[in-house]
Structure formats: structure tokens, C-alpha cells
Image (cartoon, rainbow, N blue to C red; front, side, top):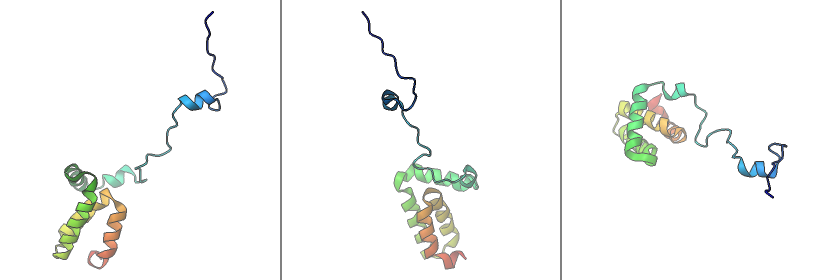
Length: 107
């Protein structure tokens, strides 16, 4: 005589339903809440950021910050702002720290 399994119809409260169903996260872990329009505001900066990330990977924000510091120390504000924008796309917190350091120059 064959045995057949009949699952409970209670829904998500059933033990087997909880065991076999994956819960989807409410937000992605890396989602920082920025609208896509903020990321796409300047297509040239976005392109440079993506190329920079492709070259340096997960350390790209730190490299961009270092390049911005070098540029600001050499009194090249335009280049420093460009690197700061790239750093901001990759890591806003790191960019805010650098902005507070060079705020008099960015004024």
C-alpha cells in the first residue's frame, strides 16, 4: 500500500513550509537607499567609476580616496574633485570623511 504525504494547508506557519521556503530579504545588503537617478546624475563620472572599479575591485574606493588626497595636496583641485566624485560613487562614508578634511578647499 503506497503512502502519500499531504502537507498542511496552514501556510507559512507549518514546519515544512518554513523549512522549504526561502525568505526574501526586504532590501539587498549592499543597497544604500540611493535612487538610481543619483547614481546616473553624471554619466562620465559613472563611466570612470565603473572602469576604476573594474581595475581595482573592492579596494577601488580607497585607491580613489588616495588619488584625491594626492591631487589636493598637489593643489590640483579639479583632479581632486574628480577623484572625490569617484570615491563618493563607491563609498559615501569614505568620501564624507575626505570632504570634511578638505572642506575649506571645496567651499
